[in-house]
Amino acid sequence: MVLLSIPVINVSALDLKDIVTMQLSSLLEKNVEISSIYHLYDLNNEQVYDLYEYNDGYAVATKNGFISEAMPNSDNPYKDVLNKKLYYFGPYNYFYDNNGVMTSVSGETIPTTRSTENNFSEELIKANNEVLNSNPMVMTRGDNVWRGTSSSRFTRYKNWKNTNNTCGPHAAAVILAYIDDYIDDRIVPSNIRTRNSTSPGKLITELAAHTTNPTATRPVNVSNGMWYIISKQAGLYFAPGYQSVGTTWGKAVEKIKGFPNCVGIGLVKAFGSTYGDHWVVGYQYKEDANNKGYFKCYDSWGKSDATIHASWTLGLVWVNKK
Image (cartoon, rainbow, N blue to C red):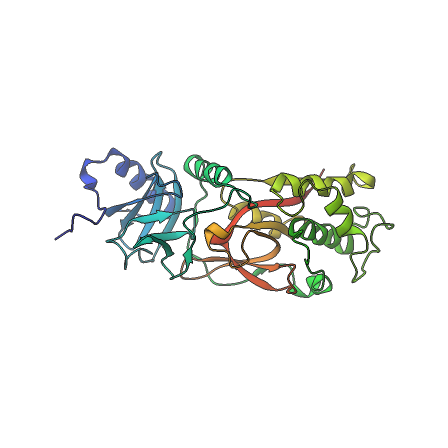
């Protein structure tokens, strides 16, 4: 017996079901049979996703048929709250309406209203959902192993503490200093910071001075501040890059695995970040067996090995080789 309040769809009536079935069968290399479908809503209260339960796992797909998660050997993350209104904010972001309080399936709550003065405005979050709807990244079950750069390399930046709400320039400083210390000393002029020093020298203050609105920076602002430093002597070799919307996981992992081994990651209070709206520098990543992703980070609050949830993230900044 199915209660009317449970958003289960009659799958036999959906052409989209066949499309998702074929994609899952190809992706997982086995025959997939979908048993149930559940509506999922985004932050703007629009029903743009569905969760599909199949043989031994679940998947999330958009109304365009794009699969954003495919999790074999996994339980439906919403299995204990199927009588609630269900929300999905991208991979690892599973929430539901708990009597008017937005609550994650792990029990964390987030505000139902957000200030447009924060780093990540309503418009930016809406744009993120639009990108997820058009080109999501497939996520699969993880093995709970940290991968990336040694934590010891980031201990020299541990005491570069953010005391004036300029977290964006702090994160940018660590990315540039890391490249300067371990990869190429052309990126930061020696009159701004001495290579291999435990001190930032003038790097943070110079970045803050040349970053638009450094206390509430968006990815493009952080990137522009980085370009000011890079253009002084390293513009022929490097250039900053950024991503304002879309799932952060794939690009962040790409930068951690390749050049330059680290990436600036934006955290969003509305996504459950215990740091509020903030910037960190990620240099390791892992996916656990419970379908959750994590980054190990410099957090500018006194930790060089902080663990943050991938579900908290939106927006990235990095440095590219030319």
